[in-house]
Length: 346
Image 1 (spheres, rainbow, N blue to C red):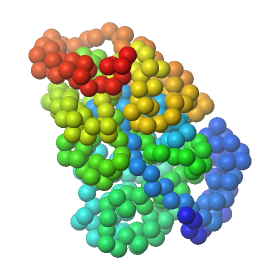
Image 2 (image 1 turned 135 degrees about the vertical axis):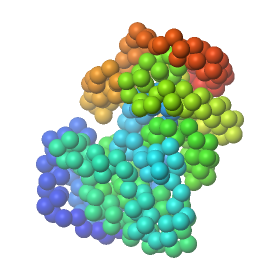
Image 3 (image 1 turned 120 degrees about the vertical axis):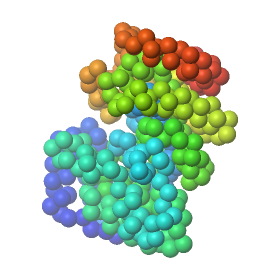
Image 4 (image 1 turned 60 degrees about the vertical axis):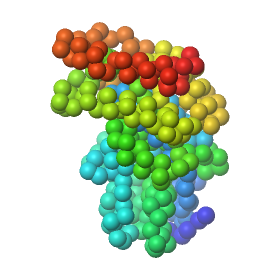
């Protein structure tokens, strides 16, 4: 469905130049088609969400990078941060009484802080004013307020304003919008609220060997000793519960098995997501170029899954190692054996 909306000609001109400098995101024909359609029209993107979650440093971005170039997937740029007070919370908008308040509540915190920096994110050509205007116009039709409709309007506005998004098949056969929300799986209420808004949505939670996870998280996570292992155990507990509560919608993925056998694991993920097999999901990338491996031990450009992630030397204090062994590892082994889709099938 199309709606009239104008975009500033100067912005279009600058966006064309930026997209031409990053032409691998779209073919030249698709680039101009996309840009000039935005100049006069915009399109609805009311697809369900496929969320990749898990504790930070557990492989969420790798799973998303394997999915994002699938021809049935529309990929959100980076993490989705629309919950309050932080990304561990699924948004609840019932107290936001008008469209402008709902827009303000949904502005992704990391968008304003990081991604609208033109020099830092040449691969993200985004017209914020279009984002706002399209959302407010659509939201006026949501007079009785339905949160799912508000979220549909958010993503419609977002993807029309994200001008160089990798529209791999240009609206024809999308099945999901895919995004990462690390930490969402820590809160049972957030999982419940997500499926309340997206009963046809899916959530994949990446589970990593706790020793290897601790080794990575110690350089990245603040207050690891105070919160890290508690959050890790809560993620495991919620994963066990949600795999039963939301059968065929909530799935655990073993990060370590994904590294060991990438092809078998991605086949399993695509099967459980009801997606067709696609070669573009066999390696992480911003198709068809290299992805940026999000590693605590140094960022790397790569077209393959790095096996070194499960071979790094461990350096864990004895006290923490004992705590992991006694309070975390038994539950991790149970999840690995009984619930992770790729470990069971590999």
